[in-house]
Image (cartoon, rainbow, N blue to C red; front, side, top):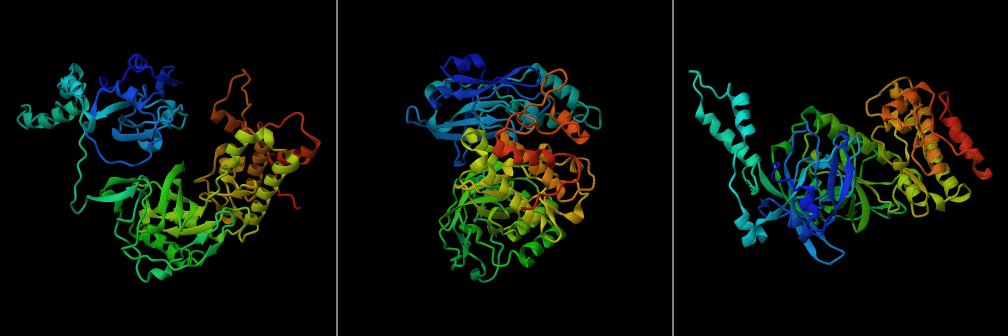
Length: 552
């Protein structure tokens, strides 16, 4: 495998520019920053059999470095794009060594939560569809190395011995074959086999969603489904007739040929019954089911611990689609929790809460929630780009009041509903900069005040929640105070925190000080008079004491 990796010197020799990232062990990790498809293929040391893949891969095609203790998860990905510089279209296959869900994006360095801050080896490859005589002539046969032989003797000598004490050569054969494939020197061909038996059959699916080619799970008259046609800015719904027959035209978005194995047919047993009960019996979801076949998945927006959000279309309108990760084994409790989040979102109708469009599924694994799409994005991203263009006298005040109204609505429910993950990234903005709360995946009623599972993002979370203590809706007021500091400064909380030695503290040190009550988000020493009231409010709400949302 080491022979397949492209060293920095060879990459630079083809006039390509690299991005340098520092890894936790003080070694550099390099990745492609500026390099055409033609140039990067000049460095390729492997050949991959061509295959169909229309998925959108937003990852680097060449990366060095890596976390020593991580076992590689080898995956072939097809990078396709049109270069804006030379206006040419390129296709580059690459061997990736990290699961897609944990791999960093192109032109970015790994964070502490991505492979512990390390890069992950990525190796560009030629494709069999465009082999030249020069590439064929450069192919070399596989040669085993000394460490492989030593590994076979030391690690497999015992289990490869027969009962008579003699070495069992039959067991050595498959081991040698597997190892030979793993250390293929200059030439690597990975065949993608497609099986069409009962447990593995081909389906057309989106990169994130096994699509309508799966056997449909819903029964009865298609007219029972609400089309969910709506206006993305107003969130209005109207009922229309839906043609849900097998001959209906289907749009798959960025579809790929993928293998559906038995892992997609998880038996949730009693867990599935509980989930279906939520989806079919909830008064808030009656008439809100939309046909899964009618959804188009365009591109991924964001990823979380268990799921992701996509931009999509339904009935000609742009929507946001939230779903669990596919290709993973999800526990019944995870699917049920997502169903509860869908039910909760459907019941929350308020101008400052994102509008619910509908729910769709053809299997429980493909359960999705459709929401209104707000192209302006979230408050965090908006402030990062436009902090100097907004003021408290206009935009900031309106955003703060809108968030406060949404919280007042949540806390007025019976029992009061606690969001528990209020932060700038969970506040979307309309084109008129009106705020709308999203992400109720960890929300709980007040009767569940001591639950600590699934708490929100720590920097915004009230100390009593972090400590697993009793908490009420006042915990949201603490988070609201932190959000107000973001609105005021345009920066993330604790961005300027320092240790006594003057260095940047580790996240766990910040959280320890927050729980101890000795650290809170900072405020500017000088503020405009019109912002004094809200800045004072932010300072008050982040104190560790009883908190109440001020009345109007």
